[in-house]
Amino acid sequence: MIQAHVADYKKEAVGALARLMGEYPVVGIVNVENLPAPQLQVLRSKLRKDALIVMDKKRLIRLAVDSAKGSKSGFDALAAHLTGMPALLFTTQSPFRISSLIRSSKSRAPAKAGQVAPFDLVIPAGPTPFTPGPMISELGSLGLKTGVEGGKITIREASAIVRQGGVISQKAAEMLGKFGIEPMEIGLDLVAAYEDGIVYGRDVLAVDPAQYLAMLKTAALEALGLSMEIGYINKGNIEHMVGRAFTTAKNFAKKQSILSDADIEGQLAEAAARPAGAPEKSVSSEVVPAHSQSVSQSASRNDVPKTAKSSPSQGSSGLAAAERISNEFSEEIAAEKARRENIDTAAAGELLNKLKRKGTLRQ
Image (cartoon, rainbow, N blue to C red; front, side, top):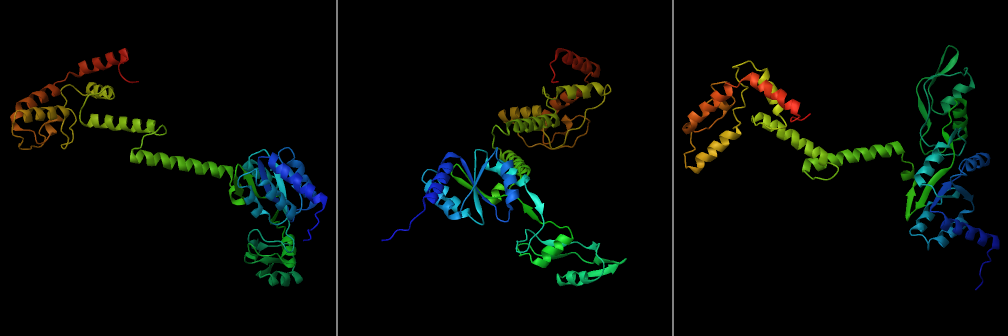
């Protein structure tokens, strides 16, 4: 069998690329197609501190990837991204940081015939600096509607002369240049990058950092809301859960006229501000005060019938608003009502100030 002779310089080139692939933790594929040599040299100079760019033939790069795949898990997937005119990028930086540096180093350039439109290339509507003449037919051949106003050609309606993904013709390239439209970007195109067994494609590397942070914030807020809704307690929501429970308990105690250290200051302040002999606020007729519940429990233990006539609130006390209280306890209820209505507001104010001075109340 006759074996093909491989030049020594090719073997050395593949070996050198394979060694670099083993030395650097991050290996990228960049496409330098349509990038003029002077601009490439400038970009390589800008990135010299952060990355090493090595150019070689596509076949030799593929052989180097195949040679290095044994020492790096998943490294062979990088070969699928060898498109256009590939070059290798070696760096110790994060692939996302390198991608950001490469994007920021790009500049605008006019379109050339044969290039692919990166987006719809639109000639805007409005007046132009061109005088009537052959220019009208040139614009018309590209599908543009024109007119003449004030001795100058006017584009009546904005129109795309090349759609995204379409090949730019010589006429379209010349017309874009006359309108000063530079749709192309000059710069390196980071196609893919390998790091720690993962090959990141262009779509992942191109994610804007600000957009990524916004996505993380949205995910964190949604996770927090979900965990609180289902009552799943963790270190991320415990403060919110305790705060919500405290507020709920405080509001419940206030509605039920239950004195607590969380609301005693407010209740004493209300009592101090109320004129002597003035009635308290009525509590909702559907709420049964805590002390009335204890009375009902006592009655149950003594086998007192629980069936009682429910009467609406006749007085101003919140206690009188309780429903379904047995007539057997009418005397106790009347006594408690009288005691509440005869609270000395001056005494309540004095107690409030005393508690404030002692620091008993919450600040």
